[in-house]
Length: 252
Image 1 (cartoon, rainbow, N blue to C red):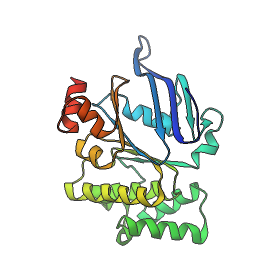
Image 2 (tube, rainbow, N blue to C red):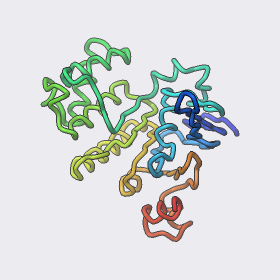
Image 3 (cartoon, rainbow, N blue to C red):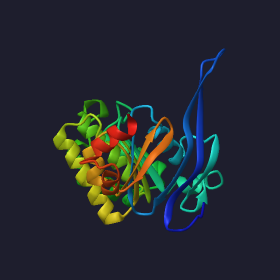
Image 4 (cartoon, rainbow, N blue to C red):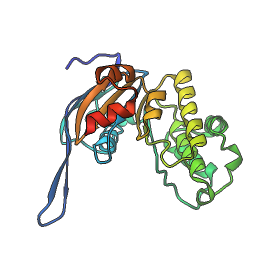
């Protein structure tokens, strides 16, 4: 594989194995030789059924898990050698946010902002900026437990933007949301991407979301990449009218 500066993430022969149980452990091969190149500044989507390996791959790329085998470079840096350097350049937004229930929105953002190295006026400006963008400024003094599902999700996205990452991982960012809130978050993601041009890696179960946001897509099943390409290219290749038909064809 050729490494170059125009690629945000390069993955070669990536494997991840989990073992469950103590006396007769069950071996689960979650990722089986993944190879991918993700360009700088693009929105790349991972699609696949539950248990396909999407979240495992995202957790490895966001430096929350270690692979068992394979090479990964982020911004041309080997993740095994430059982990701390890379952490400051990325962030992750989970589709199931879970912050301390007694903290207010402001306290949560202030805490994470400090973890990201922000202080004083700079931190206050970032909090104000992303609370305005995500329309949660009226909830700053509201405790996390009091927030609606949609507001919790917008808070999680605001948290992930505080350090203005070059690489943003979005794991099911609209899961369980009402259609109007989900559409609003998709539009915000598009706005962020058009203004800052971060590389965005997205997982989702919603084909319409993938088609709206993604420049390229990889379909994954049982830890392996089944197909990769642009939404239009994949539809043409499989003579499909939409991504849902592509999905059903690939995972059957």
